[in-house]
Image (cartoon, rainbow, N blue to C red; front, side, top):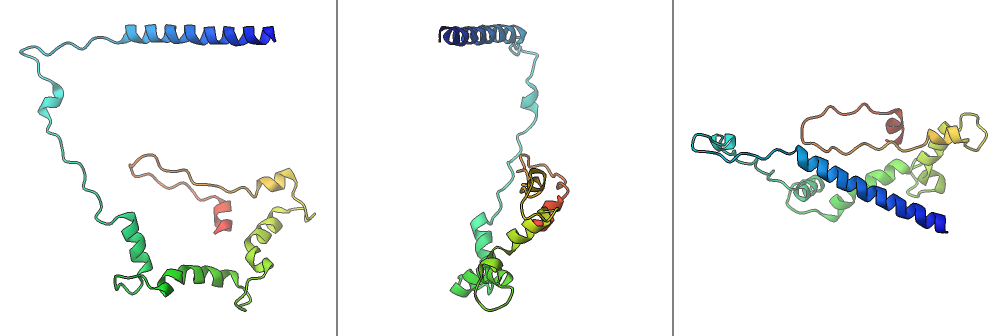
Length: 159
């Protein structure tokens, strides 16, 4: 136990010494900015400040409301609200009986398992299981236009 405490104490001392050394070297590298004299002008003073871009008139919720309001009467009726759920249900109800059996409900998962099970053993080996992972798209961090990444084969199967 004593060796463990001595190791922790020495690690903390090394980290503290590193912080002091880093702070002293970074403070020495910074040159002071000279104060503008009578003949010097600041470079930013010459450029006028542009107006920030205006925000979009439609908010995210207004756009979502417009998608649901199919007849554009300014109100979302019950049928309009449930339309997307009805379409999703109809895609899953393959035999059209108005009910979802467990097989119909899990059809995508069953198909994904069958495709991953290359040796048809009824069980996924680690290499086969790795093919079922979900490929997520990275969130954009910049507002600059960026080319979309190429779609992976797994994205086409999940859709």
